[in-house]
Each structure stands twice: as C-alpha cells, then as structure tokens.
Length: 88
Image (tube, rainbow, N blue to C red; front, side, top):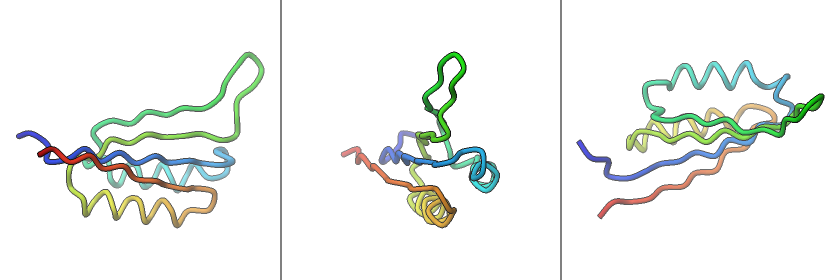
C-alpha cells in the first residue's frame, strides 16, 4: 500500500554519551513505526563529535510520529523537527 505522506523527523542530540539511553529506549519503543534510521555525526581519526543528528523516516501514521516527536523533545539535550510531504 503506497504511503499517503512521507514524515521525516530530524533529531539533534547534544552530548550523545549522556543522552543516548533515553533516546535509544524511545527508538526501540517506536521501532515498528520507523521505516529508515540514519545517524550522522562528525568523526575523524582521533575525534568523535559529542553531538549527533538522526534522520528518521516514519510510517505515514501521523499520530505515532507526533507521539515520538513529543517524547524525544522532552529528553534533555534533544531537539526534534518534522518534515511532512503529502502525496496527492
């Protein structure tokens, strides 16, 4: 069944080492509503950024996406922005 919309959540995490546990717990809780998960952070020989960015492609269940977004935004050091693209 084709998606009625694409919902993308951009999740910015500061100080990943200290905030990763509650974020990972929520990603596991909503795992069946996440189609694709892409993690980005700066890394080089001898350096790994404490900040990171996750891109989550959600199923087209707006309710689940909003629930996850609200719960992630409640975690200290986490900011979430949503993009939604409708399919006519």
